[in-house]
Length: 208
Image 1 (cartoon, rainbow, N blue to C red):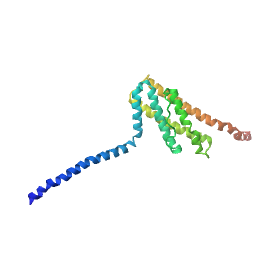
Image 2: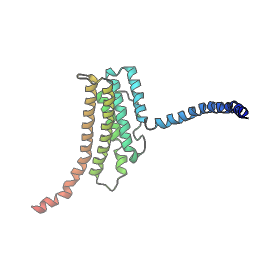
Image 3: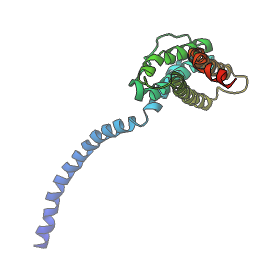
Image 4: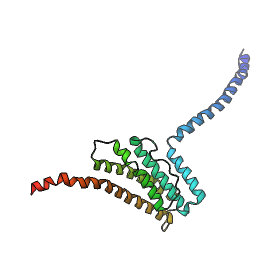
């Protein structure tokens, strides 16, 4: 009896072997699910990797590809901050390939500030000056985040050393964009300043 019960063990060992072969297939389905789930939190990293791979083909030391990286990360982060107001990918992908500091800054400024009217239309009750300041703060913050991401990646590649044309290129782009945002804000506040004296002229006269 003991031997017959022991003898039944090999006959039961075959099904578990089949189950083991099934569990070998199951992980492949789980792995694809896990890969998708893992891809969502690291979407930003995947985008950066794609940009870097493209950049390396052209040689990032040239400076052009580093500004392409800066442009992409800046536009992506501005899109993220404008998303709650204007929907996803508010700024469409631009096809222009002028990757000089002036060209890169010009595209970032043109594409981001072009959304001002759409943003202002969503805040009809707000003071025009406040709307302009809030809008510029949003796009400026998005640009700074994207700029810092690009700089960190380039720093990791060791191309931002002293005297590096890449470092001077992205720094010049940063300064041009910041000045552009200042100029844009000033241009939006100017009409409010022109109309203000009509309403504000009375109080000083009354005080005199």
